[in-house]
Length: 269
Image (tube, rainbow, N blue to C red; front, top):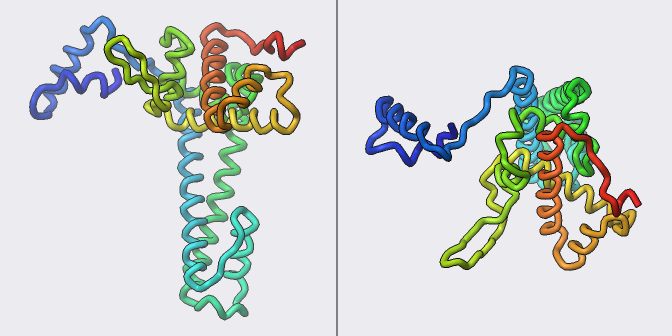
């Protein structure tokens, strides 16, 4: 059971006996939700994603540190990969007297760490591709627009049993892509998305939706009437959230029913 659903049944204080009593009380509820057990393969794939994501965060932290330290000496570079490479060339050039030797040693260590992180991330990318090719569910999900091998494998690893969700809306709510509700007295008020689900999956879905919108803007949106009408009345990022919700529902339907992606009638025409 999710700990957040057991917490309301915990009485005063916190100890093993109180926690056990709360669990026994919560498990008797008819509408209680349970967390399905993942297979060793799924848990391994999820660990692969989590480790890669950790290394990416560390890579960003190291890059920011290199930029910040060199900015103290008045050395700045453009945003992006080429800008970081320019800064590392400055660090490696011992004839450049703008950087003191002590600072150069520290920056060289950060540069070595950055190089190691990039190699590790590349290795994990290859492992994810191998995992994607060996998993039938991820190969089927890959046909959804905006769903690449990264998101497809993350879904196959994160969702142990898609049938525990009653509908695609429940699945998108689990990810956190549905609006918050402030309803009372028979009046429905919807706000921004809840963001109460899986942050990693949500970020991948939004990134995939943005890629679909970017491609549609370049090559035209006449083959996607729903997206065309949405972009005409809503900002791009709002449309991306709505499209991410739609993609999540598609993914759930394909996982729950074991189906393959079918192009919409308007798109196939």
